[in-house]
Length: 401
Ligand SMILES: *Cc1c(COP(=O)(O)O)cnc(C)c1O
Image (cartoon, rainbow, N blue to C red):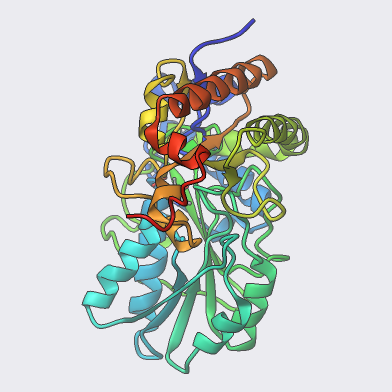
């Protein structure tokens, strides 16, 4: 049975898995203690649940439980990591290297530090969205304290060569942080084999609840130090004060456990659906894949249908198919995606893009419906478009204003 509307915006947020919700529920009404209350069973039970969730999160990324700090999500974790490192290592230097396709959480945090006197290098990427390793190494100076390169991109799914990046960082004694918010739970991520010193993740991108996430902070070789950004009761090893969101943390833990056991089968099934969708839509004339097709998350494809504005295209079907043109965070603006621009796309081609984010609950019927609906919408929009008619008449549209 076809379920409408079809949700293909899983890179913006995922639904909470019902098993996650079931795990969380007792922590609202029954086990409601403050995990920091040491003097009674309500507190002990909450603390026990948090400890267990910390194990579930740590296991998914190959970390030690002492290396996990719970936060309100990936944005907060990114802020804590970058600002915390920048303050802590200020005497060594104030240079940070990042890349043009990073999430705004990273780019805007770096901009904030730049205003306060830090030096920021924003590396360009190639047409697949990959950073150039030689350019990365060349950018390192004696003042460089941090390299922040995301694991996988939220708009295109492009996966960076994380192990090669960490090897360069190690060689120069620079810390390596990776925003792995889109990667964790979807593909194998291991902080040790990947050589990551700081990593961020978020529950609502991996079938957990919104408003909870974690920062991984390496504790040995090297031991990473951070300056807290939220002061108070000294929770989370004094790196992030504030009463713990026990139900949320329990949900994050359960979501991580489910991803660990189901990642292989989920990604095998979802990537088949993604490829089917992509190959079918590529049958349309002048359609292109944005980003890498080889180094890519299994559930994502980003496509441009040339000579059509995706905002216009979506009006034809957005009651039935939930998609986005760029990232959720910037989709309120009509500016073309800065991520796609960084890949070298023209404004026109960037404005012609759709991001498909499949997920655990996407069905075959929904993908077939999406193929039919979008194929029809593209054909119809083009049949009514004077620009398309000019293109078909052989007018070179790239040379006329
Ligand atoms: C969603 C996302 C974030 C922000 O996560 P929140 O938990 O919503 O703050 C950061 N980075 C990437 C790559 C994301 O996809």
